[in-house]
Picture 1 (cartoon, helix red, strand yellow):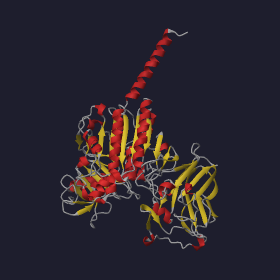
Picture 2: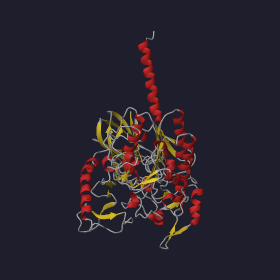
Picture 3: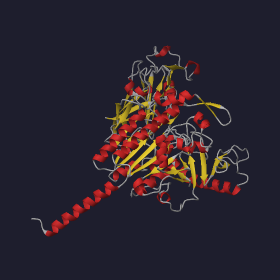
Picture 4: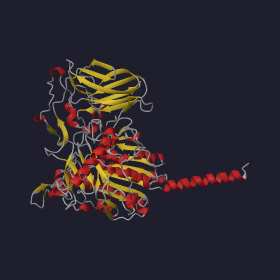
Length: 630
């Protein structure tokens, strides 16, 4: 029998559930579109003389534009800062490989925050922040994952079909993508696939009345230069561009064609949002991970800036950032000129969506700035630093208002001190060193850098581990792109077969493990001694060349990035070192893997795997290592 008090309790609970559901469904959706290697000048609305980007221009008109917005000059560090709100040097993700593309696991990422708050979370595109547990996107809070491993589709960690696609195809067409941890073939052009699948995911979220957090990091406009001809042809037909100085510059037709493909897909995405009533309450952020990769594009139009991707000049790290949320009432069609950086995005989104950060962030929320309030951080001093070493000023730029401080080459300057000072308001191309006449600014910025560096380097030194033996992840593949050692992240390095490295690992549960070493992706089914293009002769008859002679490289099938080189190796032995385990075994020419059985105790260790010749000399590291808890 239901009493009056019970009825009141039930009614209260029902109202509470309805209220909670209403609050959840009223929360804004979040959509982050990140392009790869697109420079600030590579947008029509930014003044480009001929590049057509109508959909980007439309978003520009409807957005708040951050015109002094900065990222790292290379992709992984930018992505780590975007997802965590923490400086690259502090989160550990300071480079694109060599063990430095992984964020420390104790730092939560945006998808985890949003998933915990009831959002549906999905990534559709490039991750590039680690490919082994617990650094994969599905380990970091993404419930739906459509991605690929490492820097790009033809990267070392990618599926073999993407690295060496069938004759007549290319890496970006009909690729094998990683869908929720399983390599799956897809039809079409990669740039189209990301948007199509993201739209399907958002449509499903709408049907289920669930807010979404969607991260759409397109792999365009990164190399290799691949795009359907219809996008590049208008620019190929133009052939050359005459600059203001009369110098003719070859138009990077495929690069601009890739941007045209992005733009077309953004138009398709916008149409979906409008048609499904999602535009008003969806926060859209549109940005790039670094400056333009194209030196020709930089010369044609770079919005007056000097530099490109990988460089500390302004053109390497200042990029576009558009913000739109119609339902918020935030005034759009305006520029925000205050100094901002990519790690500001995480605290801003959490603030706007009412989610409390659980880890100290270096970024600051833009909420007040977006609403036209006074900016309390106008005097902030920022540092951008990336690369492997972590040494002072390698590679770094300090930013304060419109000042930029870089390390100089002056012989009298103290080592590890910024000596090149530029005011990008009066000298946007950064050709006049203003250090001598602005000693106070110079001193203050060097002091700010030194203070920042002390804390940042302490965090930088903390290790990032790959975990083995987790109950839900019994099999882990280690890739050379994530080892600490020689650079080994693309086709040229791994087929050459001279790189070596070591992984930092944590064994979560003690026991017996099967460890398989391979020189090629496991799905390639290639022998250890084989070359990239087919079976090799008897290993003893192969002349081992530790260097790669450029004269022996020739294009294959007209496809860039696919090389025929003398890469067959006389592998006769395999060596595995894990902690105090050290074993070398003989291998046969036809072996596809070298297999070890290893008893492991729990704890942190180093794992090194090598291939040797018949005399026991190390030829190269095993670039693919599969570890399975038995």
